[in-house]
Length: 612
Ligand code: ADP
Image (cartoon, rainbow, N blue to C red; front, side):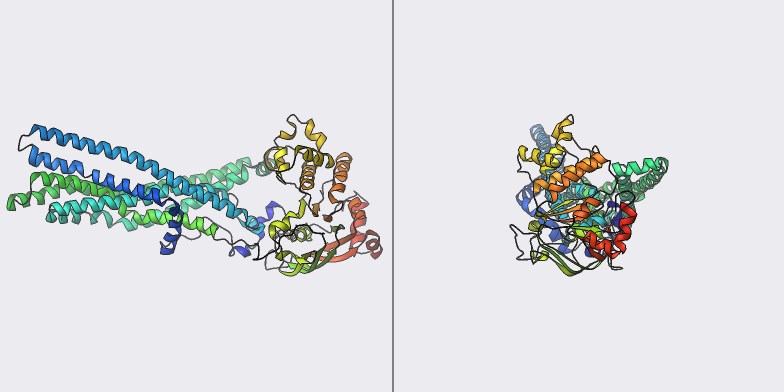
């Protein structure tokens, strides 16, 4: 049985090799045209709303100018003329502009989060759909908690990327351009002085950006580790392991250490560049004085400017600080957003390893003849896991696979539903290569009961309906009766609505297996793969399972990884595997006569506990 702890040992062959990790290098991602185009594709469905948003941004940028312009008119016109009416009108208009701009900002924020949330909604949906079609190999190799983090942190980060980066940049560009044009239009000489002050904000930024990026990358890695520990330790299986080995203290210490590193890095990140911002604040304070100095010179020497215009310039200049500071951080913000999308796209780009070929066949009803011809397969390039396998199973026959643990029995059965594809050789069903059959049609014909039957953490009923949502209650009861589990289910307080707990923890192994058998009976496939439980069951559970298995296998082609004598005796053919190869095959009598590997296994197991 290929269990969950084997994950890391695979090569990740079909995934471009190696494991996935949050950020693989510390290099800053390139902001390429193709990347931007790809991101834009997600925004495209919302173009009308985005135009509306841009409209709101332009209007607020223009409205933002009005208080400064009105101030100029108050100083230059209303006050010198001692015109009280005009003064009141101007003050009210300024107030109106501020109010209107506030109202539009509310709408803008609403639009902003609506668009961002729906882009996230789209990406989350398509990512979930995409990941569902990933191969078993992918899930064996992916790091614990990585997918959860991708879905929550990375995709969840898109909202702030949209609001803080894309919208912010656009808004700042508009504010900058509109304000600068107004300044040049009013007095180009003073405008040039204003512009000359601005580079002081931009120059040191690259360095700060780089430092921040580096720390952010390290922080993210630590947070990923933290996630991994949370996910692994605080799950049913993880907790059990921790408790059994009384590792609570060490786990807490390990967690605390990584948590501390992550916290330190986060503090470091937020402190990076503080000196730089202090310098900027000084510029902010000095800026108006320079304008008063130069504006005053122009006024006193050439009388080429009004007092109101100078005051307006100071107000306008302060409107430029915001955009310029944000332009200074533009590369950091953009790179961060690019990294986010890069991670998302990295997963999106992983090709479906096992996919339908064009023109593949839809099978309706199959007989169930199965043939393995010269099949070879390996999880990694090092050694073959199964070698030169030739099996011929006639429709309706039951074959058993026996052999030591790790001999490749489970792997062999995984080839049939194409959990993994053969490296060489062919597998056919009714003479048709399974690679030519639509995957959905192929898997629709196969039922599987594994040793550790997986149940979703929901009710028994929903777990049963998973095989076929259209079945009637009567059919469900019937299947459970056949699987010898109905009586137990109705004896539970909530009957079929009983919640089974994480991975079905609230049920015993034998009960879970019988529910899994009922689930397959409801699917009614032509082919059944059964991995019998290895653990010795008490005689009651044993006989309950035994009589559930009979109708499961009856009339279907079945491949059983056998551990029980009764199954082995009933098999039409027994294949004995050793190190991925079939070393003996035939009926029980034939194999006993051979007096080889099988006889050895048989004597060792059945004569002692009745289990191979
Ligand atoms: P059996 O069912 O006979 O116990 P398996 O088919 O589960 O054997 O395993 C056969 C071999 O393949 C073992 O050596 C096992 O370690 C290896 N193996 C199983 N699953 C994986 C996997 N996902 N990645 C890499 N190696 C694996």
